[in-house]
Amino acid sequence: MSKHFEIRKEVVLETTPEQVWHAIATQEGRTAWSPDPYQPMEGMVVEAEENKRLAVRTPEAENRAFHAFEYLVSAGTDGTTTLTFVHSGYLGDDWDAEFDFGELTAHGWDLYLHTLAQYFEHFAGRPAVFVTAQGSAASAAPGSWAMLEKALGVEGPYERGQHLRMTPEGLPPLEGVVDFAYPGYEFIGLRTADGLYRFHEMSAMGMPIAVGHYIYDDVDREAAEQAWTHWLERVFA
Image (cartoon, rainbow, N blue to C red; front, side, top):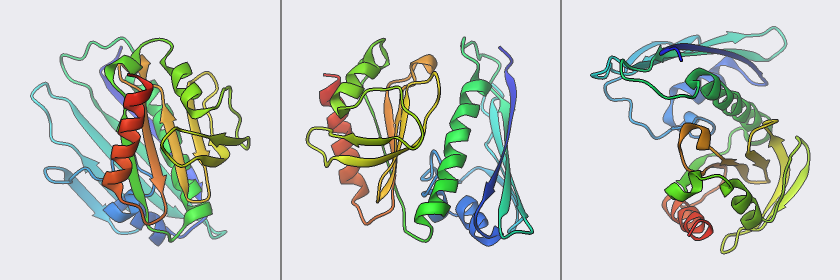
């Protein structure tokens, strides 16, 4: 597998360049859609041209690994804004994983940019809280996804637009529509009245099952993360 990679994506958003800039260039904005909105920016090399271009590069590690992220914002003539996103980098001199990092990460960016579009379409202007939790190492084993589905009271495959009701024991039920699904991948994306809920199976990368929820309401982030962590612990005990 190549240690160098480049992922390029483009999404048309129903909003202004100023609002897209806020979503990519501020922590408040990133909390509504990005995979790690609370990561500190200290040590990053940042280039910014307001409402047009943002580039962020991580420091180079001892094994020469680094990641670079570029966002290009372009106003359309019909009231939309096009966001072009490029994630590139080098995985390190000692990288020897068998999976294709670029391919799997590209699927992830499809989800996150879709989440950004969903935010502007359904939740624009509402404050966001990102809630994440992951299962134990046991949840990376074969058959774990079926255990998760059983604990949620659902069963795939899933299609966009499908109505779904989840009943995680000890947590409020979740009811809404499937807003994102990966054909051939074990994943659920559910849009409810108050948020976008995501359940990820990541055994191909040697990682446990995880959840990453964007809640557009006044919630206690720490309490919510503890609740979902404890739920995953019970599922995979």
